[in-house]
Image 1 (spheres, rainbow, N blue to C red):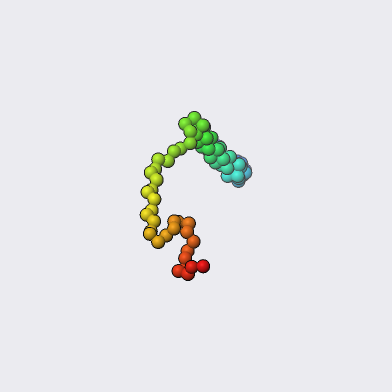
Image 2 (image 1 turned 90 degrees about the vertical axis):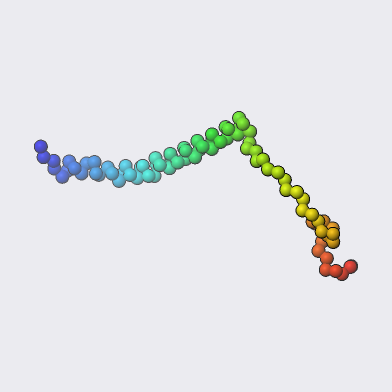
Length: 81
């Protein structure tokens, strides 16, 4: 049994269209599906369990200096007006 050149070109001639469909249609659709699916899972988990809570302790207030009128005091240049 012998194969001619035309017999071997058949599958090879379909490589570029298959490659383009795979890279331009199938892979982007799968990426959107995975990201959308992950977002859906996160959204549903927030609906069921509530939003995530971050447990932290508030820092103690910084001590104010004696010559300051508070954190929002206007800067003084030593001249009374």
